[in-house]
Length: 67
Image 1 (cartoon, rainbow, N blue to C red):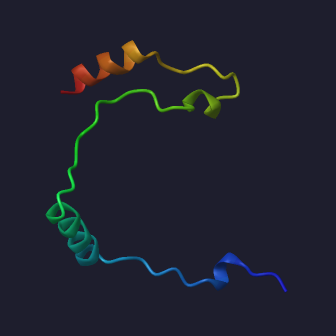
Image 2: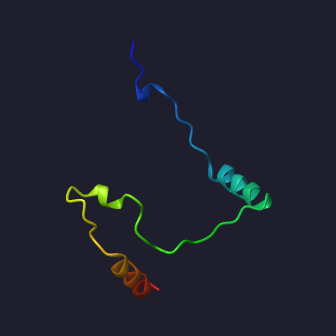
């Protein structure tokens, strides 16, 4: 017999659990950095034409406008 996705019970974590895990990560010396926007690796594969919709220069210009 086949197993179906709806048969599996997926338990979501609560906000308190996520906060606790993040606090543990930071207590162990973990660091969180905000990354600059850019083009994701393999982004062109999302388009059939294999061409990117925007250039990196256009993305960085948009970042400056949003700030």
